[in-house]
Length: 429
Image (tube, rainbow, N blue to C red; front, side, top):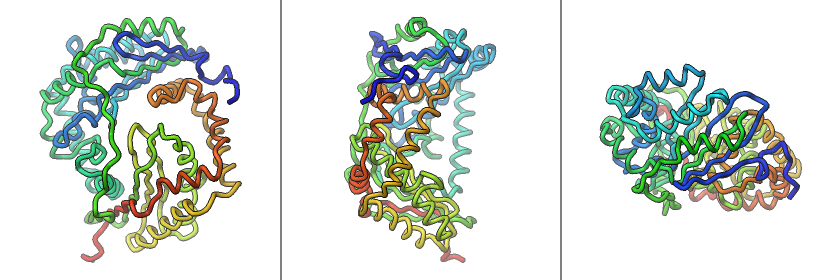
């Protein structure tokens, strides 16, 4: 591996501290701009819900900023607006994530608001009802969105109903309607705590000062009842229905969502799979799928692939929007590209172009405090090591065509692929 460059965040310029209560702090000094960014996470995502309360974790995260034991909604948001700062929380499958930004001189009040919201929310009824209404409106609207319905059908077929990935983090209309303020309070007491919390601070602040301020805000937080982090096991088997179809009245477009279990972020072949995915449906005009299905054959309005790569068995997905008459032709064309990727090595040109693309875009993602904070958070969250970015170029260029071929063969197995379609019912026309 090459020697870490001083301009790239690495183990020599990222300050890392572990508090006695289990919080990990990481600070990167960036005096080039006068702002500071926070990025953090804690283990309180939807994996801790019961199936009947799908959406509970994300609703709790959304309501953290609506009032605490010491400040009401107006006071919380007024304190941030007075200094031009912002702060937000969002629920994911494994974690609740949060991010914020302020002038460097206002780091302390930003940290205090974040700490108060995480530790002392009261979930005011009127604001919970407002958020619930907004969520229900979004879910009702999404029920007529063929892209959403196809992705939902794919996920539910790929993961059995005993698996946390079977359920969307936003919940469904029935579960959201039934969640009460007491449910939110119980979930918060049971799952929000300092152990395993990651907090990254990047900006025009000395590392020692940032650690002191963060320790003042979070260092005395305790929750002895906080459970150990949960893991999501590989699903035992997907649904027997590998071709779910959802009819959405009044639509003129069909959406296709194809999915199979892909690698977790910590898998040894994740980067090889990521390069394979780029060639398949991302690089240029959405890779080979975009070229074949959309440009050459004119079968799709859009077509691309995505690799999950989170804490558990996320899906490797292919999505396309097509004329209903072209559904089967588009699916067949996509399957041809999947089979080709798993049957023959990519060209030298494909590999070189994508290696250059991956290494070239990385510095661009480190041009802002937010981008730096995001990458440092990922390095800590996935245990990649603080020299991951410094070694990234060498890691990408050490990947071979055979590595890409093995990754494609390992994951892109047609017998386990779910193909979901949502669109109009031609039988009624």
